Amino acid sequence: MKNQDVSTFREQYLACCQNQKRLSGKTIKAYRIDLAQFFAFVSEQSEPLGRASVQAYIAQLHQRFQPKSAKRKTASLKAFFAWLEYEELLVDNPFQKIRTKFKEPFCLPRTIPLEHIQRMLNAAYEALRAQKLSAFHRGTLLREATVMELLFATGMRVSELCTLRREDVDLREGVIKIHGKGAKERLIQVGNPEVLACLQSYRSAFEEEIKKTDYFFINRLGNQLAEQSVRAMLKKYAAACGLSANITPHMFRHSFATLLLEEDVDIRYIQSMLGHSSITTTQIYTHVAAKKQKDILTQRHPRNRLAVNTR
Image (cartoon, rainbow, N blue to C red; front, side, top):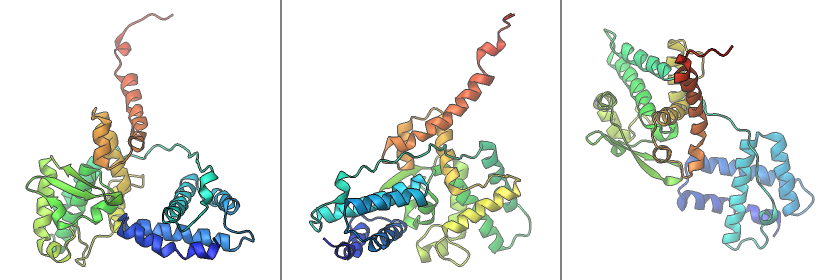
């Protein structure tokens, strides 16, 4: 099959990803970019589309991108060719005889110390207690406190938080329905009464706006809250608390998992709460918890209290 023949199936494949696999708009956009980059590359090659051209493209990915990005772009392309083969639109899949195993550098997830989370939440509630706040300003502060509370209470992704619907938040039962990656749903129980009270106050303050948009978190214009707004919000509170680290929404997710693990919560439960399909993804947090183990054994081990003459 010619290069241009294969490229004509791009939109059909992306429609399948959207309508049948129910992948998110962000994922579809990434797939479209990945495929466009690949076909731009092969269009400049003199040889026909096949194993050699795919290998040359993967080699170029390694030169241009970090291992994690190169791996994701290769996976996008591999999935596209697998779909072509499944639909019998391609006779010879060039990926069948290509080794695509990547070795990524191991990076520990960045977490927020618990005392820093406490300082940020205290700053939000202190601002709410100020006198002579306008209704608009009070609503803004209430939304900010609620966003931080929910990020830490549930470990949800910022994309999941911004796409929460009105019907996803059941405050009577204290249950949040989260729509995760790959159209997978999970339920998270919010057990802290202070977090539930904050959620209730927010919903009461924005009840009419929430009904109009059907999104639980809305911005100052009454539209769906944007992910960038959440990032800016956290940056503002980190600066107000004098924290030098760049605090991101995903760091709240990492902290949620790591701190639960340090409280001896079974990693399988954490996997379920994070919405990870594989336990391997969740196991990265065991390395972070090992740092806590070192602190415990260094500072609190009974050996420290023994008076032993070692000289």
